[in-house]
Image 1 (cartoon, rainbow, N blue to C red):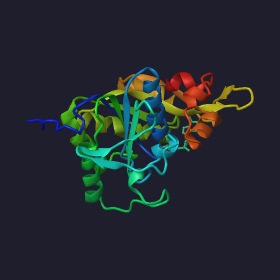
Image 2 (image 1 turned 135 degrees about the vertical axis):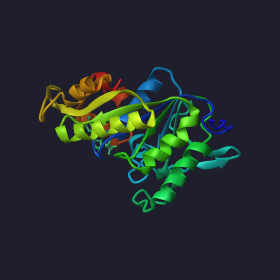
Image 3 (image 1 turned 45 degrees about the horizontal axis):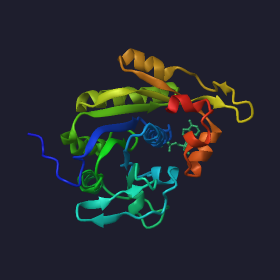
Image 4 (image 1 turned 180 degrees about the vertical axis):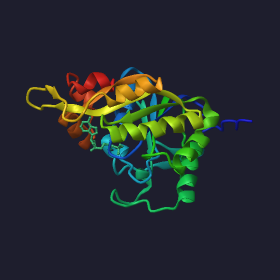
Length: 256
Ligand code: ADP
């Protein structure tokens, strides 16, 4: 029997989307952040749950590094990115004393924190909760899926780079999704070509199309290719909203 949703947890969340990637550095947090911003730009109320315990980068990408979370009667209050409170964020980054502090924990402690993140954050009403997961398919992923499952069907967006090795990782992610009952929303190919900062032309440095081919083979939707864009990197580094800053960038259509 499914556990009943307690107030102050995810009872008011309509859709949950996990963002997964086979390895680190392929742009999972970037896609999580931009997906949340894109949804917010369409008028949705969005939350981001950053369970990438060993590399929590979403606070920096949203310019929220150094913020603290507070407790209320129903749990932790997430950090709101905007005054209108349309984008909320919870991350282990907010629980560390300094940004450089490392989470050196064994599995059970990490899994306990993930469960606490799922049960104890007072999200209120949200249209979407985007969950940025650690790279790979680990114990932490299983804990995340198990903790979230009672709150409805879970969707997954898989992020890959065009290279064969990363695409191979995504194959394993697809197996994980099938075994754990995650509904694959689709595959995003990130770092697909390079956008010249001068003429904005996109050049394919590596192979291209791996993500699309993989999606076709696996029978799941291909959501788009995001080129390597120095403007996107700078926006993320500065914690700014790329979509507002550079609405004409070639990376923009794929991210939205
Ligand atoms: P992951 O979450 O998979 O470890 P990140 O999203 O943190 O990867 O991305 C790794 C680095 O690459 C970050 O510094 C980010 O700003 C940069 N990056 C990711 N995707 C792009 C892109 N399409 N264009 C430019 N920089 C990118």
